[in-house]
Image (tube, rainbow, N blue to C red; front, side, top):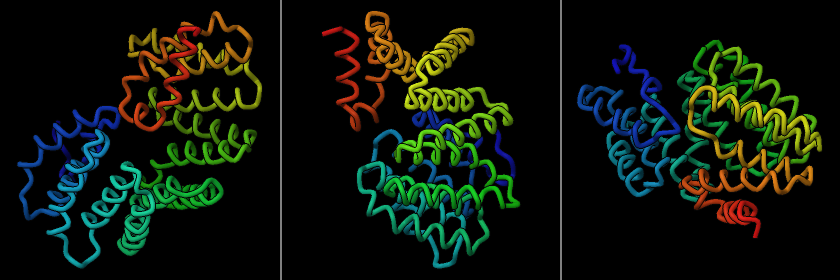
Length: 291
């Protein structure tokens, strides 16, 4: 894939397929002169792809290569280095070690008027913070994105609405969570992205279940299942899990069982989930077998 003259590496990213993204990055890397700052930027994205594959040692080694070549001046490669070092630390369960990297990235991004990376830094600080602080930071990031004159910064809004919704949900404020998730859905639809819109709809439905509006939640999840099937796309394990949960909440346990089983079949292949939430997978397996 040809990149524009300003090296927009986002064109190469598929965050659901980090291995494929890494391969694309490595193929493109030799085309950039090593003295071009974009060369270091691309190395930070290789590190991010490695981190998403749980290859944390490799990611840190890649970032070490970048760190050795960074100067003292504020620069985009330096901002991206700090963000990715923090992300790798957070993903490997060292969130407090990650915090100073995100804080430094935020300060430099503000100095350099790199609004998108400033928003990214606040968004990452929200992820590693307790629920109440996370909500405050997410709202701060939304304000930054909405008020920015840079389109790249405003593109964060869908993710920020989503994260704010979960911060509210974690605090048990389900009504407000539903409102922001519905806002996220409307924003995603306005951008015309089917994949992200489905995620937003899933979040709305999940929150409806928390509000005990289970029939509505089930209807939305079933519609998502049919949409995946009609599009001929790979099934989503989280949709099957939620259909099972809704049916179980309605005391339709026999109907729920095959959905739990299918959810376990798909989600047990998720590297992150198997490491971070083994109990959740064990529960799905148990509910799917009826034992």
